[in-house]
Amino acid sequence: MTERLEGCIALVTGASRGIGAAVAVELGRLGAQVVLTARTQGGLEETDDAVRAAGGQASLLPLDLREADQIDAIGPTLFQRFGRLDVLVHNAAVLGKLTPASHIMNDDWTNVVGVNLTASLRLIRTCEPLLRRAPAGRAVFVTDAVARQPHAYWGAIGATKAAMEHLVLSWAQELETTPVRVNLFDPGRVRTRMRSAAFPGEDPATVPTPDTVAPALALLCLPAEGRNGALVKV
Ligand code: NAP
Image 1 (cartoon, rainbow, N blue to C red):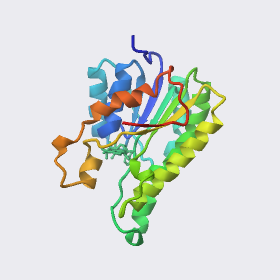
Image 2 (image 1 turned 30 degrees about the horizontal axis):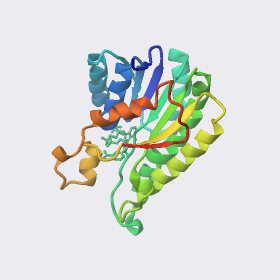
Image 3 (image 1 turned 180 degrees about the horizontal axis):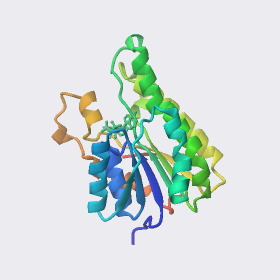
């Protein structure tokens, strides 16, 4: 029988669409109460409907991951509301403009670094105390192959994903002797808004849908997951 997440609280960033929405549905299906975050209220409501349709329960926490105070408040808010956090999935990211490194504009750099890297640190800081208190705290950070295989014009997202991976793997080592398990997940090509923006000429019908990768990510959230500091690729 598949292990389940009944009684667990799972926070999913970037849950308004794409991979984050599919992961939220999968975690809800496994019995978790899913806390959905992103900026777009309408998208969060659609994901909420989808989680409920799958038999799960969700709560909405609209926020902008570039706003430091909003992220710092997540841990205290979850503690006040639920008294616990069992699963953190940091999936939200931005592509930024694909452009030569010498052409990257300051605003775009600040945006990409803010969402893809600085928010990761702030999520680690605000969530660690609750994850440590959980019987089987789990954290999964979604990454991209470009972190390890640099491509022309992909410098901003590639640099931030590489730095995020380094930070997360360092954190995993720090938690090695605790029950918390921290891993990276690389979904490969997935049919989302980000994918269309990166590859506008690609036929979306040839790209796997988010629901096909969500179960593999959800496995990393289960109490039985023993890996720590792993990079799991689809
Ligand atoms: P997506 O459809 O563009 O979704 C991105 C999510 O991030 C949205 O829910 C968006 O919500 C949220 N987000 C962006 N900026 C935010 C901000 N400032 N504050 C809060 N939330 C913000 O992208 P996706 O393809 O599902 O990507 C999900 C993850 O998979 C990313 O980490 C990406 O790097 C990774 N990935 C994707 C692919 C692929 O082929 N799709 C391949 C490799 C890795 P709002 O706009 O509503 O705020």
